[in-house]
Length: 192
Image (tube, rainbow, N blue to C red; front, side, top):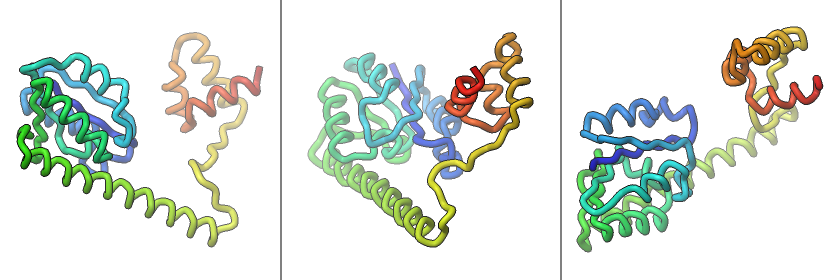
């Protein structure tokens, strides 16, 4: 069986060629029969869909991912998982690299490339932290997180009624109002 795995950390990744839809399209084109996907950080190997996929794969199966950094963003976790898969007889195919072979050279290449993926992620975190520190120092009104969306009580109440009547899901209401689910539920509690 040929399994595909796609992963994104954030919704904004579609700008960088890593959208979930784009990955799934590439995996289908590569002949994947079943595709699993997560919206989860690459620094953790214990991801819900990846864990389910990992438990399902057996000797003779193939795991396909579009890029190595979609698979893992830490050297230790990625190397350990790839070695485990290869030892179980599962072949690993990284579309922009090729098949990973269970040889000293293959293991060296994966270790080095995973180290670069981890380094790249660490640099992103460092640049983000530096940018936040600069913004905080230069803008007394700066705060982390999304800007607060102001929705008046009447508008919110109309959408809440639609939701209660089953005319719209919470997700649809939130999307229309431009608020998060957390904000929705906080407002519901406040109005109770």
